[in-house]
Image 1 (tube, helix red, strand yellow):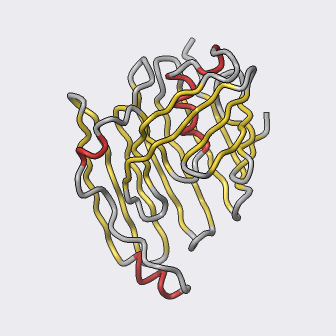
Image 2: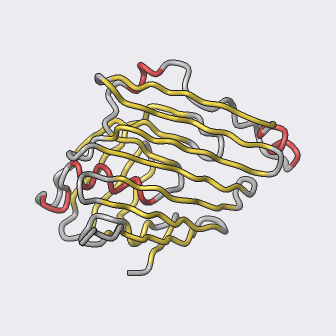
Length: 207
């Protein structure tokens, strides 16, 4: 009998919004999902994600759409290098300016080689993407206090700018871990499958 994918629904805490993802974790992760959020301006974000069986990220496709604009970005990993392609229709920066927000800048990345050390991708505002290093590093099986500095390809939303970022995942024992990046940190609850239940300040999911 075919395995049913995980159906995951998070409610945003930081803004009006939600995310629904369907995730098949039988051979690494194959997932697709939709975010809706009100901040900084209302948008819908759709994504598709694929990893290899060891949970190393292989491909991420993202499309974000709002009133009068649409952006897309595609990240593909091959031969230890990332290829990044991006496109824009309409004018996100004009939509941001009309509501008093700073411009977002361009989607994509100028130099994909800056992402060379990244084994994981991270989509802004999405609790699903914390599962990638959690499962790849087998964080739930590590002694409490064990930490792993990692490099990720961080996709900002709604701009779809792609940046290299340094993050630290620390096992806290059981189904908890600490996420840290720069001066920010949060202690996050997950279910036995490594999917986030509560990300303080970002999102919450029912069991």
